[in-house]
Amino acid sequence: MTKPPQAGSEDAAAASLRSIPEASVARLAVYLRMLGELAEQGSETVSSDELAAATGVNPAKLRKDLSYIGSYGIRGVGYEIAALVRQLERTLGLDHLQAVALVGVGNLGHALAGYSGFGGRGFPVTALFDVDPDLVGIHINGIIVEHVRSIPEICAERGVTIGMIATPGPAAQGVCDLLVGSGVRCILNFAPVVLQVPPEVEVRKVDLAVELQILAFHVARKHLAGQDTATLDSRVNGHAANGSGGMLP
Amino acid sequence: MTKPPQAGSEDAAAASLRSIPEASVARLAVYLRMLGELAEQGSETVSSDELAAATGVNPAKLRKDLSYIGSYGIRGVGYEIAALVRQLERTLGLDHLQAVALVGVGNLGHALAGYSGFGGRGFPVTALFDVDPDLVGIHINGIIVEHVRSIPEICAERGVTIGMIATPGPAAQGVCDLLVGSGVRCILNFAPVVLQVPPEVEVRKVDLAVELQILAFHVARKHLAGQDTATLDSRVNGHAANGSGGMLP
DNA sequence: CGATGTGAAAAACTTCACAGCT
DNA sequence: AGCTGTGAAGTTTTTCACATCG
View 1 (cartoon, rainbow over the protein chains, first blue to last red):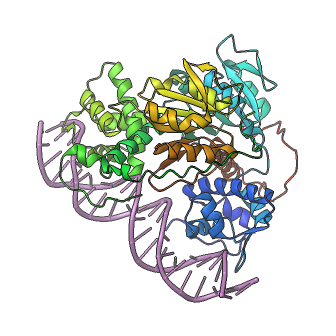
View 2: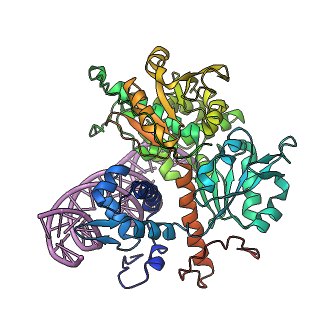
View 3: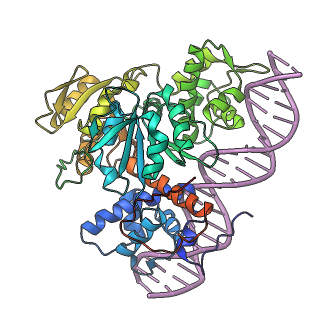
């Protein structure tokens, strides 16, 4: 009724931006990373079964996800990794950089500012903000921390498209309003509050306390479910690390 | 994942631990926090409409979520906050502390170790681990960083029920195996890898790069939708990242 | 043959709308 | 009168299973 799912005869890029289920988008990013690793290991192709196993996803679901971005598989063989990576990057909007502004350079914010996983993946942290006079003016990774009141000019100036909020809860809504007022339409919120935004703004929330509470629920459930202490399955593979992947400097 | 089927009309506490939709559990934690704030402000009761508005959720959905943990609302009035908080805490397994172990005290891990949002909410960080000799032995928030090889003894000794992994990607699976071998059944993974675990172990993943990629997708989509001039044409130019003149008025 | 791509069925989740309690 | 609790309808997401193509 809403969207006739038809993509056959049109340009894949256009189709891909039309209507990919939200749930699929989240997984595409995961496939992309795994494909990067496979490419580094020298693979040229993967089957849906292999990639699904590596990413912990049902193979049919994976194929359906990939079908949303166009058909790049070879029947009887699998997917050509390089081509698939290119297509995924294009779909996810990673073919040009997204300038990121980070507001709140406290405990968590400082760590985020130094997280090399961003810049290395097309998300250069381009502006830092805080209200604390002790922080305003310092450099982190070569970027000066500016005062929050400068958000409008600096975001416009530097073409910020994504804002990250890592302030204390009570400050978050105000900061959010500033970002939105500056034209930022996508926000990643680490503060423990629910942000109110106009409908054209996309907010994703990362809430550490909530994650732990969800796990606590499962601890309780497992504990109740059965005294399964019987199977003390201790297969501790000593998988010591090897190459450096690079997450934290 | 064992799937205990069915549910019936029975004791709320037992029912609540039986089969609450995963999606609801995630929201219950959010309601709980908001209820805490309301209680601080002196409210005694809330209606589903109020609480729904504050948490950005559909009121009917909220009522259904709460119905899974038993009926604690008063028709014509709303929910008694104190009672609801108590019930939520019990459901989420927050009525007794969950000892948390954090592995990886680098950039992000250090921030997590210092994040006061945990201890204050029933999740005392009880053990810290790393492999780096420069880190092993230091104190963070009064806790000594131990070597990763001590995970089994120390986790058993301190009754750790939840593990958080904030290591570089390549080290994560090995650390995970150690935790699982030590009896930890719930893991919060910040490393950019998909962990392979036996089915009785619950893993939740917080992946910052993926979150940004999801937002990048939305940036691209909005950009297309808004001004349908041809960004569509796939001209992948290398470095045109300045964009002065900008995205928006 | 082997793996993709995809209708169609199944499951999960959300929303509606209203009966029923206070 | 007002608000909860919930069956039923609606929507999205997952899974199945198989025709199809290289």
